[in-house]
Length: 305
Image (cartoon, helix red, strand yellow):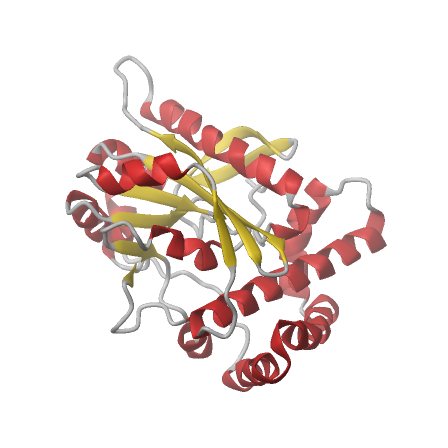
């Protein structure tokens, strides 16, 4: 569990911003003039640039690629990294195109009964998202639910990204809770949950916060953050695993794979119980990346101690 000192201290997340206003403007112009295919065409050169000249992000992607494609070899791994960057760029373009109203995307929603249950329940819930698929474009699946939605994510260092994605604008129904403040934003999260809101948290990136080691993810032990489950157990709210995948040129499948109800039991170490809940989540995550291998954007070595 986090120490008192580490919990009280503000936590600055170090992440290198990429992209700039001019770059986003070019993509916007290509999208406006030539549609999605035009923007995708421009993207192919940008993705190749990152593969060849951004060793930091290439190496981060390699951690996943080597686990997912263990027999691909050097050139096979490079090709896989390029496809990952290409897919990630397409997802970002799709999100902007949807946000601006330039393109309508068909969202196929699975497990609607769980979403309806979330909407009708008086308590809040934690929506556990991941750096896979396109959770941003899938958020409208919750528009019909009369609950506030908070995203726990760092204030975007790169202002061009923030303006292009439109998150946390004054007229936005989706607001941010920063994990960089005191207690990692826990006080604001708890308040939102007690008010019956939906709080979206990332389940696959540690950013230096406390994590738990699970026996296997893609064939090897891995570490994942457990804050969402710890808070859910304390507030007695469910953790809902939320995944989405691009399944066509203008189509996404949105899946609520399961709802986990964390509750500490007497006679067993809390961290062992947390590890069980995290393992349930990572099992769903593993099934997703097996089905959609080039829609996994966990550019972080979760297998490293």
